[in-house]
Length: 361
Image 1 (spheres, rainbow, N blue to C red):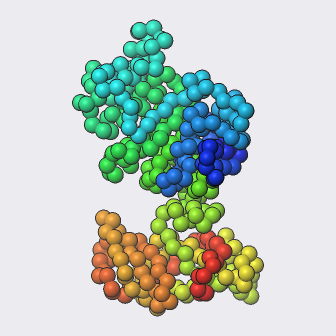
Image 2 (image 1 turned 180 degrees about the horizontal axis):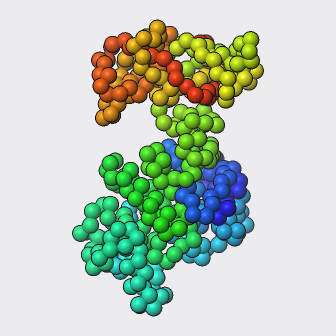
Image 3 (image 1 turned 45 degrees about the vertical axis):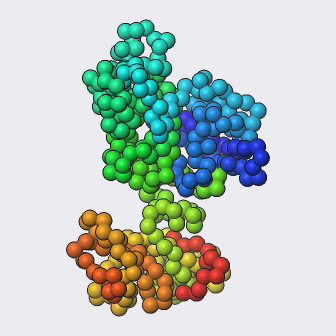
């Protein structure tokens, strides 16, 4: 693995809780890793520790096999061959685009500097822009210049700290796809921090969910969504709710899940009832697990609707009082307060221990 973080801890003086604790992750060469989590969870601190900007209190960080940080050792940031892109771009307003990009390669001969500037500007889609100034560019173009400047010295690792947070929502996701293409074309290994799930899904090969300084899960986007390993990840990623369920075995060894939406039998990838006291658990239901079906005997009342263009996201209240979410094609335009038929359509089951105080199914 190109980047290896092992049992990493970062502690600030005067604070009871460490900012980062026990974090381990691996990132292969040429892959893009993303750290995501709520504000203050420690994701930026973790990124800064990899950069050498925060001291390591425990564990270690290795880049391409070389130890760069541990409790007793810190390779200076300038010797780690890291390129960094920040959320505020940090461009020099008085310098042209070309001179901004060449800022970190002044040790090269002039001809090679110009060649490299032209190469990276073409890579980020800004060929011919070397003589322009930052104020003449859009926010997305300025971010591309910042990316070109970071790529110019051919760093062995790229670190990006919420680089799109100052841009509008539509541009963020599009630019995330474009930046992924740029990084892949450059053969760069990168670690990216964001609080936006769409950005994370658009750019990351591997995504880590951070909560209270701990890495909850390090996985690909599909697994995070469909196979969350902790309740926090299940709740944080995507749209979903927890519904009480009781698991039991039928006469053929299949697991029967009894819920407020009825019961269903699952023969594959379902936890056994013995994993939970009395088989009582909380079932994770994603919005795409709940299907609108007028013929279903299970009725639910619409309490909220959000128009998403091609679909609505309905919040639905069951007769039991529990709420579920459902993605419904937008030509099914029902009013808030109206009741509709719903059924479950699940190809796997994700369940967690029942939270204290939750009613039985």
